[in-house]
Image 1: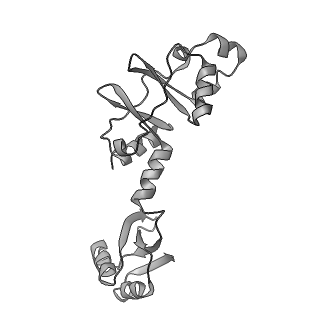
Image 2 (image 1 turned 120 degrees about the vertical axis):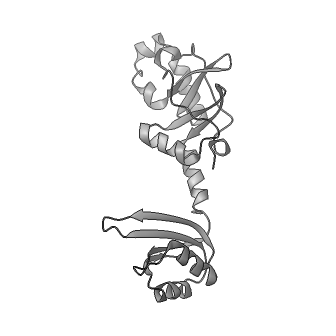
Image 3 (image 1 turned 90 degrees about the vertical axis):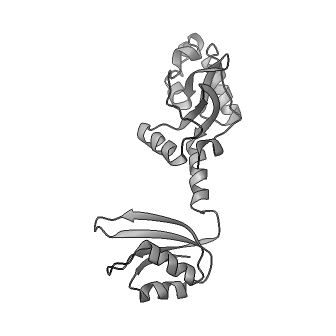
Length: 200
């Protein structure tokens, strides 16, 4: 999944000579937390709700313009960046959004909300689904064996996740389309795979 498929394309921007008050009003009006600063079609910087808070004093609001308070050279991404890479950037730098640039032109804005929407679709969380949490057989069982067995029993896999626990036993989270699970669970246990939990 690429950033270009999930970013907001109708971007609200502000000019560098605008006032802090104007930026705050724009954010409230459009229910956004990030405002790219643009002049002559070129991105100059970024202001965010959190970085503006430190200037919420009457003297500062009246005396300073956006160019005085904006983040210069904010972290940006290319539209062909993968969603998981963008998520890693946001997590690493503890930021809430990423301007999307193509040939130095601002073409979109990607926020945590957009990334969350992408992952919800990826993992099928809004579809009617069930989840099996499984430890693979210690007799050499593989994830491919489990998925093949589920398919043979009529199950339709939506997504697969994995978490390594401190015991070094991996738990595989297998999300399936809603359906009858008891026969699948029995088949897995017959092959010595351990079904840790069932979320139906």
